[in-house]
Length: 145
View 1 (cartoon, helix red, strand yellow):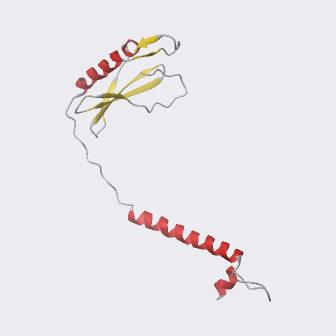
View 2 (cartoon, helix red, strand yellow):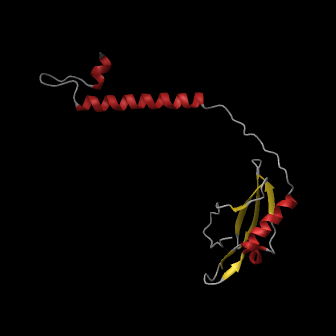
View 3 (cartoon, helix red, strand yellow):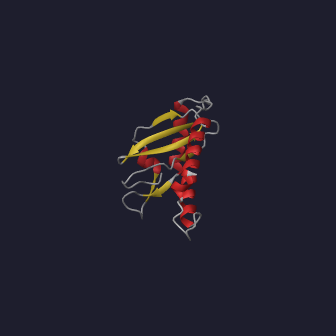
């Protein structure tokens, strides 16, 4: 009974113990306890490490550059400095050094620096389908290749 008196003491005649203040305090304390239980069970139940299956590569780095080159040759985008002029992506990137790496999940990432920004392209290992990796985060102006 002392816990109940701590949360909602009765104060003389005409005072109700179970009023709005009791409801608010009880909701708060129950919420804190339930949050603690949730956090504890989350750490206990979901603390197991999971290993992702590594998909072995079926191609080598030299085979990946050719589809990226074809993708850039087929892409025409507005120029970086003058949006009214259309340029071919390959003409902008042909003199740059490309890095190619396998990502262990069945795709390759080809990247190159252009105007202080690193551009990424993903190449599927099986189909050699090239897509532009949209994760370019920069404040510099970028070209849509």
